Image (cartoon, rainbow over all chains, first blue to last red; front, side, top):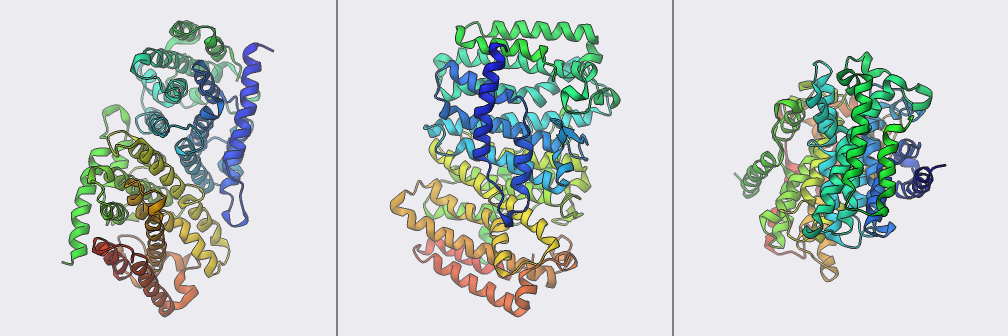
Length: 298
Length: 298
């Protein structure tokens, strides 16, 4: 097992335990809301975004207890987006992380409310006393998380993606779309450490470097996703494949070709690693993440 | 025009102007996301929850600029809940505030994303610098707003409401359900002023009083809604009537009878007004609100 696999596995265990503690259990009268939230959130996944939060926090020696609410919150926001995107009115998917999607396991109304409640719980968590001791940091984390998740970020990207199904986007437009749809949460995850460490103007160079790293790995992640959609198997991915081609969507693969997409992804890995130049070997796992993102099989 | 009507009208104008400024306008590539958010939020409505925020803030002489983000945010959360509740998978309503519901005007996917983005924007707004100058207050407002909106509050109440359609609830259960579904946002609105004024432990009596007021008017509001569903007209209400009876839902009217429901509502008005006893005539408009809530025709 590689150094990165080991570290990601250990972090995923910590994040899973935290998520398990943060999401309440259902009582008799609550209906199945918390069941559905737990089902979708605790179904597994690589916990890549939380790992980025924890590693960016570790760069600045932020205590784990101060960083964990942000790590869990970004996974809740990511999960809510999957639950809503999988709905019949959106991408209409039956399978996610190898299991029935939330609306298949429960029903559409429960999936809508479970997504809504996960998003809300994410904000409750990062704003709550008991996480980071500085309320100013909690307010800034909340603010940045909302910017990443909202109409100018992830949700806006999903809207563009739905609107694009009827049109043909060029490389610039697809890059912009993906920068919002997947890039915005990566950006939050990578700069979270600097915010949690209260890096001020003097250290804004570090925050900028993490932002450049995030932008590169976010785009590389999406190109790798497009490659996996063509080359991967449903068994490895735990979700349907070749959906984008079937939907006639503009992807990096059909815009750049297989070889072109692979080259662009490799170039972005180099850019991501060079963005980390200001950091010493404490950033080695983040360097490994950049390589992993394009080498992964799911 | 009564003193209250005048004050509510003036506040609604200020709130509408704030909402108009807070919600971005669409650009070409954004699709219709911001259009849908603006359509549903700016469609009108009494702005009752923002009015409660502004009046509770005025009790403590909190400047308007410090209170407006919370006032606008609670209206965004309320609007998001209407947009999602109106979806075919939930209550399946075609008409809201006299206009086609969001998914009728746009489509289901856009309505889901517009709701998601309004909820997210509400948190962005209350956490952002530029509103209340104290980041600790911003973090607490964010935290309380999330508690009110989430699985233990409004969204949890909506889940209970959906689950209850197959069963018969008693008065205790309906009261508990409505305490979450409608009461939680009223509670936030009424205690917001005390939070924005940084009322500490010494003044927690004031926050408790506002909480008791909120609980009473929230329940009275819901009883009045049930009465309007039976006695009101679609033209006055701008939405379909007698839906609850058709759905076989347990309401305060069929649990208490028409006369019993009217009496209980009147009793709650008295309780709300007596909860405001610690406050002088600065609370007169809140006293008027309690009376208005059961007297309104829509």
